[in-house]
Length: 334
Ligand code: NAD
Ligand code: UDP
Image (cartoon, rainbow, N blue to C red; front, side):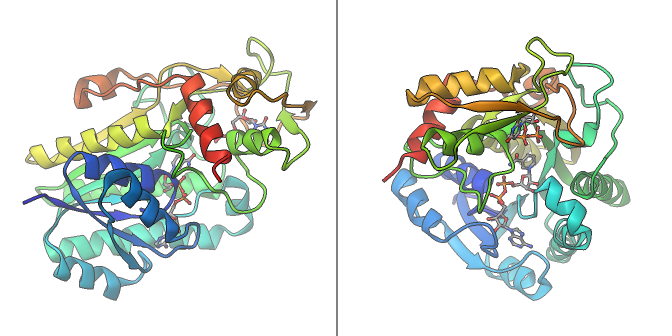
């Protein structure tokens, strides 16, 4: 019997790629998603890649009746929790929506798990919990802080998970701190599909390469970095997906555990590095303007990857050229 995994937010960007990796590793996947930022067409694309269409329930993680129904209907071995809202700017305009989706949603999910006697949980946290880095690379014991409501929801849920772990024996929890996920599945069948104007650099660059937008605005060229533009640790979304499979395996094998690990590559690239790599992938010139810094941005951020390597036997494999090649294939899909 294949273990069944509940993936919340499984039709979204990272959840869909992780569903592919889970199915390819032999797990059966049940997705719960309210489709607020994704479409059911993703399910057919996953089926095309893996040969198996994941089971799907359209519903909200805040809806306790739906959660209870799912835990009664399936013998779930673990939950991977991706569902939530993720736009930093929007979170300052609509903080209550962010606390409701991300914090209340997680509490509802964990309460339903507790009722069902299920204690294996993998959580999508973020490198944003490190705030402005005091030293690089970022190790997991770096002090945490948040400068916006989105980041604060991640801090709060991390704390809730720690409280829960200490309150009751048997919880097996992984808090995964993602750096900057980019790219798409190599098939070009699934990828990131932002609604409206992309907030993140790489989807924006991709849309400039196709001619959908005229120019990239490079936010800040006076940072204390090699070329003055912001530096980040970009990680291929399929590497990130495989990190989840390893974290899940680690949870399922342990008696109890609270694991907190970075998922990054350990290497930082600047905005201009990424634009150049995308020019190479697309064969297009990508015009850009150097403009003012974006409020709240940090200069540079990259992961210390030793703990992930030790605890999960996992390392990112794909470099920025592959990230850009795959993002371009997805962007130019017919
Ligand atoms: P996404 O928006 O593509 O996917 C999230 C999915 O959750 C969407 O399909 C959406 O419809 C669904 N969803 C949202 N609220 C829901 C709710 N209340 N009930 C049920 N479904 C709901 O985002 P993503 O990039 O795949 O991010 C997944 C997770 O990873 C999020 O928790 C995000 O905060 C975290 N994360 C993302 C990044 C990033 O750069 N993409 C970085 C760090 C952490
Ligand atoms: N960035 C940029 N132009 C954009 C979007 C982002 O110059 O249109 C820069 C941003 O200032 C940061 C990097 O690209 O240095 C990555 O930003 P993104 O929003 O993708 O991720 P973040 O690290 O902020 O979560």
